[in-house]
Image 1 (cartoon, rainbow, N blue to C red):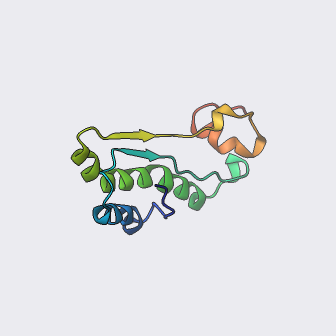
Image 2 (tube, rainbow, N blue to C red):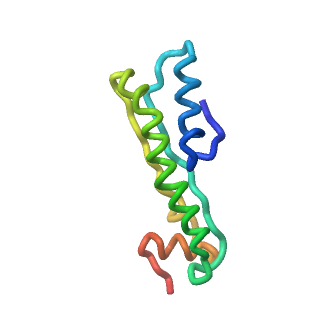
Length: 109
């Protein structure tokens, strides 16, 4: 089941947990954290607010979703969490993606 939510907000991350508590289907046994944001533009001009949004989605969001899913994963007896950190390295470099290159330590400058 896919869920649309602002995962940087604890109440949104918990919403799926509450829905699953009321669900009659078997307990879920997998969580895939695959959310991300990609600010456009050169790294040098990236604002702190944009950077904070990246960290909030990638780090805080994964943390909050793991907390929300943990009771269901434990109940299943075989829970799995998959964290996908980004797919930018699979695509050709683009000047507007400089933030991601430098963030990962692969500076092209």
